[in-house]
Image (cartoon, rainbow, N blue to C red; front, side, top):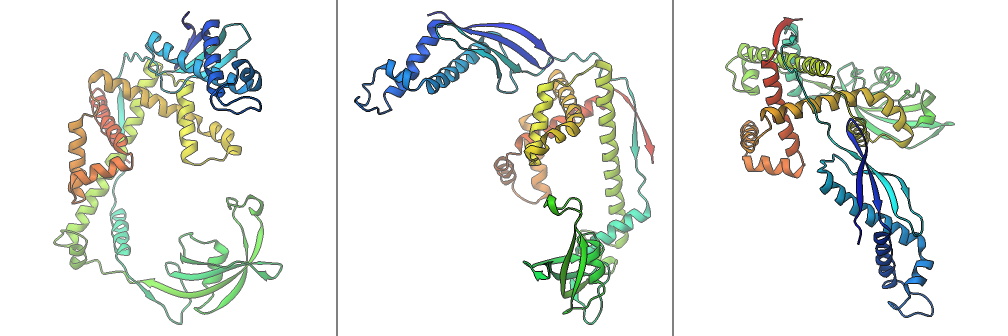
Length: 417
């Protein structure tokens, strides 16, 4: 029986197009196989099950047989193409221009998304700037205050109006034509934007046990599109007010927070953490500069299929509704293109310089995580495996190794901002 013929018919960055021709003999064989499948399973009046002539089956179920034939022959052709062309696809192929006529070969094209072959002639020799934000005393104090709030208990407030920073327990009841609708209870910290401004303004005029009506404007991002920007009347019931009792910032607090002998030791540790974070953010800026320089110096392009895959993945992650996909794609395309270029460059350098994360690298990182969390490395590994984040960890390690290497190839000047 004549074989399936696969020939190259076109190529663009990230996509190879293959022309496929399935000879008549293969088509007839596939049709007979599909008809036989239905003949053994269906029941028709006047025939015993499994004894229906294939000609009758083909006449009775032409669309189903055609669908089976196309599916089977496309799958067979794809396997032939993979073996013949030594392809390394990054996604399932797209079938285009399929033609199927009685007594004739089936022809179609396979558009195959593949990772493009890069040739990076320059990856270093750039002059880069690492901008590092200066850590001020005020920033340290803000961090210390946050730590105090995290450990501060809440105490009830009696016979007072609430103030910003208080935690209030309220019930909101929508009023439609004067009739009360379904009520909902909320816990809100005033002054932090957790409730509409009109609601907060009403609450600060109340005391526990009081009820008041108010008019609010629903925000432009309200879940129900029909109600966005509209005015609504509501009823507010204030049940309880609590204020935080902040602990004193002293040596005792420092010892409670961690292994610090004094508040000054705690303050120094916070300063060091903020400075380390500022440097990490500076390094992120350097990484972005590096990618832009390498992309520009080597003319790296983002293949359309890879960009589409990234956009599709993010649309699924953000649960973008179908009627918003076009707008999302338009706005997100530049972000997806930058992501694809970055990944192509990182993968190429990792492969060329032997910088991919090894099993030893992964084991060491898992051991570090386990030590930080005071747990067993096996438990960390099992957790990462269960949440399907091992690949994410491996990618993170590879990125670190690649950017460490790339940064050593260029001149980086630190700048305090």
